[in-house]
Every structure is written in structure tokens, then in C-alpha cells.
Image (spheres, rainbow, N blue to C red):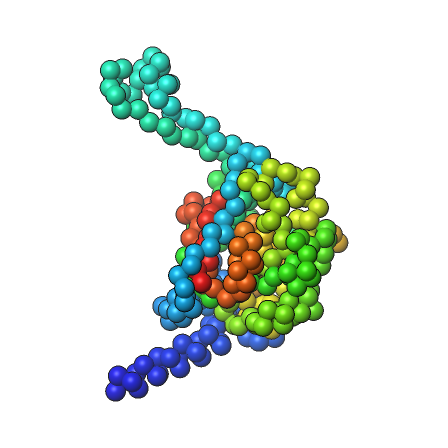
Length: 326
């Protein structure tokens, strides 16, 4: 009886992996999880069965840090403000201020900081409310600016609605396939490039996978991404709309990320991949993930784990530290 139950559970897990909830081959995901849904395609991998399947992928226990180190000098997309860290309370200040919080003779002091930061810098996951589209300024699931925008953050599908992500994942090393350290500026990654890289790796995307695309930009980051001139050109390489559609509609990707600040190739119509993934499909976007160590180890298959900041109304889970576990 125990063996039979184990076999049934294994079969259920396999079927679930091949047919993520809400995904239809040739169509993708879309607005299929109910009128109030704010989670999108991550609904398909958030259940206990999917989480256990992802955890079973771990074979060696090696952890890869996918977050980039960030400070006020770090490279960013020009439409966002930089980070600023300011000491808000210091041992010196607490000693000399006229009204100290502790008696002057007390030996205890502390450091604390105030942060001024865009929610779209550093390693991040775009929320489904990040991009608005159309004359009615709607985003995923038909939420509209007129009803759900605000001066203190968005009120639907913000970063606080991104669930903890524990999912099967695959690295597509396009730079490695091309035999270069980093892809040239405006290099377009479409279905042919993705398939060729996967064939070289001897791997494939399976329905329900998180997909990470390496351009090699992470290798230029250095300590804190301060060399903007070196990063800016290469950062324009990325995914095409056709590539995004292939990953979602034909392969079933639930989250697509890369090592660049914008995932998609620059040039042409403004941000068609963002509109397609975030607004139309409900597929979150990961940006500025450090994929260099994964590529060096040829660790193409891994378990992706990411927990975003729960700041209500933010439009991205930002300055985060996701990991890959092999």
C-alpha cells in the first residue's frame, strides 16, 4: 500500500510538472486565475507538490549567490534613481547631540541608516504592476491606474504580492554558446538562439521552470557595478518578443530573468517584452541576477529560491539576494 501511494504521488508530481496550473501550450498563461488574482504565473509553482518537486532537484547542496552588490555608484537603467545610504544614528552623534537617547555616560551606542532607493535598482523581480499599457493605463488582470494607482504605491499586484519562489530552474547561457565573455551591444536573443544554446548544454526548458538567460554582463559588474561606460553598451543585449513568446507559450516558463537591467534587447518599440510578460501573461521578470558562477560550473539545472521585500505598494522586489541551489 505504501509503495502504491508513493507511486501515485510521484505520478501526480510528474503530471503537475508537465501541466502547470493555468498554462496552455501555444497560449501560455494570461489572466486565468480569477478576477482578483495578483500573482499570475507563479500560481502554477506555489503549491506544496511543486515546491517539493523543486527541492528534490537539489543534489549537491552547493549554493550560488545570484545577488549583485549595490551602492550609490552602481549601474542602473537611467529612468530610476540611485541608492543612497545615510547614517541616521551614529555613536558619535549620540554622544554629542543635545538630547541623547541614552545617558552620556552609557557605554552602549549603535549604528543605523536611512535608505533612499528606487524599487528598480540592483537584483530585483518586477511586480505585475510595474508596467501599465493602453489608453486606460491597465496592468495585469485588468487593474487600472484610475482605480488602483496611488501616491504611496500601487494598490494591486505590487511587490508585496510576489510569493516566496522555490522552483525548478534552468540557465540558458547564450554568451557561452557564442563563445564570448559577454554578448555585444543590442544582441537579440530569439527562439533560434535560445534553442541553440540549450542544445549545446544538452538541456531543455520544462513547463513550470524559472528561466535565467546569461548575456555575460554580470562578468563586468566588478565590485559594485561602478563602471557605467563598460556596462551600458553590453546591457542592451537581451530577449526579443519572439523569444519571450517561445519561452512562455511553447515551453511554459513561469518567471524569466537575466543578468541585465532590463531583460529585453534595446531598440525598436519601447519594452514589448515587458508588456507581454508582465501585463499580458502575468510572468514576472528578474533583472540583474549574477549568473557567472553558475555558468563557470556549467550548473544549468538548479533550484531557484527568492524571497522579495514585503514593502506594500512597491513595484519591484528590489535589492534582493536570490540563490540557486544545485
